[in-house]
Amino acid sequence: GDSVTQMEGPVTLSEEAFLTINCTYTATGYPSLFWYVQYPGEGLQLLLKATKADDKGSNKGFEATYRKETTSFHLEKGSVQVSDSAVYFCALSEGAAGNKLTFGGGTRVLVKP
Amino acid sequence: GAGVSQTPSNKVTEKGKYVELRCDPISGHTALYWYRQSLGQGPEFLIYFQGTGAADDSGLPNDRFFAVRPEGSVSTLKIQRTERGDSAVYLCASSPNRGETQYFGPGTRLLVL
Image (cartoon, rainbow over all chains, first blue to last red; front, side, top):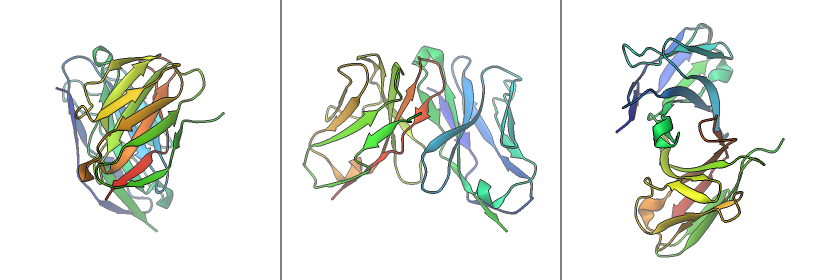
């Protein structure tokens, strides 16, 4: 079945540092890929998505590129802020599976001033 | 506009009791999903509704769990004979149609004592 693996946290960074969170996936078809974010005390929010190979999703300074050859969708941000402290979830969905989301385990990111 | 709402926000119950969790999707959204998130893990799919019908209930862990969406809007997740292992955050998401972005509610935190 489908699965998503992402790096375990916590990841602790200083403000303005570069952030990478690795995400790889296993899927039977051609999934859409997502990054969701959960800020402290808040619900899950879609951060960005990509629906086909080589697409780049971007939002709020974050980027991720759908790499079919390496089955990866790594999240990057060039200069993090304290407000980026949150838990980040990589996820996929497949149309043949009703578009239900399959999530990774989440990566907690803590940005210190 | 109003987002996805879930009630109650917290529920404490005793082992063996029956509980109902409610989800109000975004108005007009035809697809509705339930997920369960255990502490420190990513959400796991439970059931998906397209309109009034359960299109995919493959994620329900056993027959103690049941969900309905009788009028194609509000959905109720029902858990019979609760067990301590059912303690988790239950998340609801809706999307305009199958395959479109899912918007999550704040979740119901269930604690079974």
